[in-house]
Length: 366
Ligand SMILES: *Cc1c(COP(=O)(O)O)cnc(C)c1O
Image (cartoon, protein in one colour):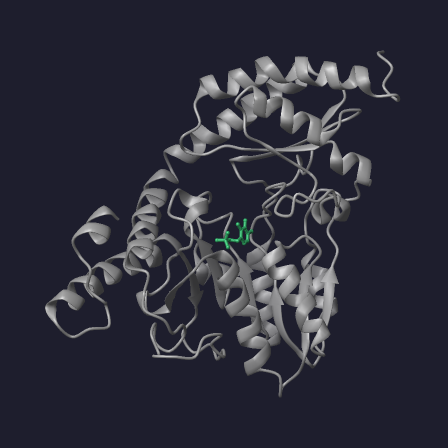
């Protein structure tokens, strides 16, 4: 990205060599992103991140298909970018079916099949959940969507780069990607849009990105996203098995040293890098703050962005009470996590839990 900030100032839409240089860099990034998910380069649209990708997919289809119908199917555990977009569409007169999940955090494809109606226009089900890491049966849902001739969007922000993704095999029409979830820059993302998909753009303007997303391209962000995609693809077979082993070491180590903890979604297929741990009789905010003081950055089962104390809709959907949701910790690993990092958490967390439980009026040591 540095040469783009310091030397290559061209606008990729300009005809002169300066602009064409920028265009070449964007083309290169586009092939890298396409290769990561087995798409064609013409099917990758660059935009500002996962949130915009989800908005473009859902609003774009809702708007383009409204003469056909106004029924959308999604799950109860989607990221806010999907959930709040669907809620907004409900206010605009669309009908949304919110598919529940099992206690393991999985959508049953049979429930999608049963929710389909003649006026259904879109199914949006995330590939992997951002809080508990559970991986949804996207291929089966894709087959259902194809048979019913209904557009299928999947939020792939968490799964991209963590597990192999093949948009052809998954039969998705749209797939969201975000740069900063794969060690790329914030504010850069992509939406895979299958050839022939009819969707109304969110932005009107100069017709960039094959008319899918107007606005002068964020060349540095796109270059960073492309390189992150290339590295993520290489790491799928090397880094991710290592990360998964570390995650398992973390969970086993904590279970051995702390009583009354559970791993949410443990029995479901899960991402290699995510661990959501429920600690009975300990308060999540307290755990987060105590770990922060020890230099460990984690989050809890209460909504993060607003700093509010609403229990997580994901943990509520898998059947947790608000108290249980507040006592849940999300620990995320990455390609940069080391064994020392893991052992450090296994070393410091038991003492923190012990101290917080002493403060709990309900906790009696067994
Ligand atoms: C982070 C995230 C998003 C939003 O992506 P941004 O690039 O931060 O806008 C959307 N969906 C999921 C599943 C995410 O984890």
